[in-house]
Length: 96
Image (cartoon, rainbow, N blue to C red; front, side, top):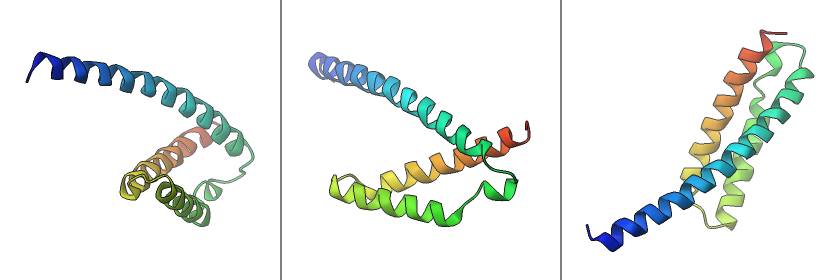
């Protein structure tokens, strides 16, 4: 690999690192909102809302198509994020 290509890769990786920092801030905000919703749930049965999950994934697919983003990629990202937040809610619910 040429020196120019290596420098280009390093430059792009710095941009990715900066974007990761922004994503972490968004995740922090999202976690705060999920925690607020969780405070209003009275039972663990309320944690998984399959209808809501379907609607979210459908909306993400539509928005991805409009923005010309790979829908398989966004579906996988959102599905995993939803699973992670379900796990988070179960862990936090116990501490009530």
